[in-house]
Length: 177
Figure (cartoon, rainbow, N blue to C red):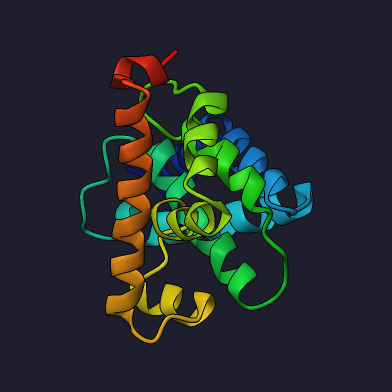
């Protein structure tokens, strides 16, 4: 295969990935205080990481390239956030919790369930499940004495949400659209 053909294939790959994955990245970054330029920068970095690891490397690419790229973008954006470059809007995180489910979850119902557990629980659960922070990071941010204390509080928050679901006799299907 000649070099020109390889360049054309590579360009086609990048264009295809842009069309499939960039809109979700732009939405995510926008909801978390970023601009379109921020989204472009983050997506370019994610494409480079993806290319180096899977295309130029020896590893097999993931099945869902779009979801994988969005995950890389979220992690890169979180690193910028942690570096103090942007403030994160946790309300937008609650909105996005439902969007990232494989099945479309009713955002309003899910958000209400999480809010009933309290704002601290909403923040803690968002940090862990949505932003992928470790218990060590959560302990530092939320002022817990140790990662174990943070994990115990996360468990209590989950129990509050479960209790609300039980009290209201809700089924999983009641939360889904």
